Picture 1 (cartoon, one colour):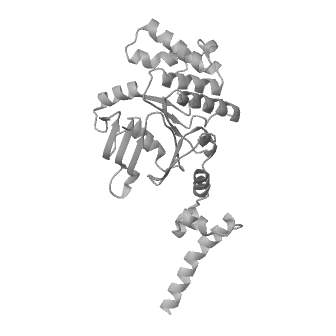
Picture 2 (tube, rainbow, N blue to C red):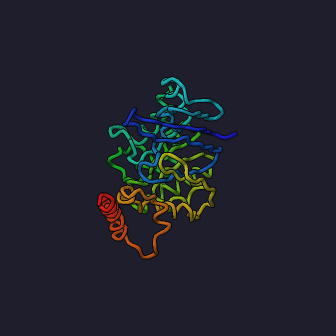
Picture 3 (tube, rainbow, N blue to C red):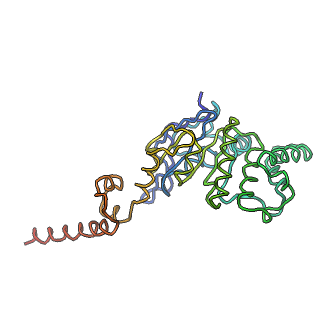
Length: 292
């Protein structure tokens, strides 16, 4: 049985002419122990999908099962309890409380769960040791580097032993060396049997995962198993293609993927812009000929 399973999940915001479809009948199944990268351009639906999986939002349509339990329609207090006990979050901006120590930040989820002070601090200390920060327990966030703050955030996500860890662009605010250390840590956590969903724009980070899911326009456009240590060719290619989509492509009514597939090897963005501008001009000339 899958750890989490989404069937025909849709999320619609607004109404009437202002309707936005953030997710369009998404199907996704993740087994226990998988390390899945969710990729896609801005606005593709990655955040909306993670909000559904992390029980931060409810779908407009569809079903969601977590550990065999239907959780899509839970009441807010029930959803909060499941989220607290079964999901760990790692944010791009760390989201550490600045006025308490690293140890207290890590122990915070246990306090919400009702664990006693001595027990929760002892457990938090052990988790900090696992992420290599045993000597930073009593440091405040402002006294830590970005990489160290992210490791504290990872420790906080682990402290409740969740079923799934959702890491949203965890290296987005880090330099290359800190990014490598954080990704290696996530790889080690995965090796211990944890299930991780990683949201990223960077194809290079897929070296650490076992599966890549790519989103576009609220849908999953491909889903690929991959070997640890390799960047899937399709993920790299899809990322490059969709990054090169321009406003002119939309204006001309041309699919970015179709347009790039058909372009000549040395064709530049400048040439594409000229092409997009000529189309309305030709249409205007044709209209004048008809009138004559």
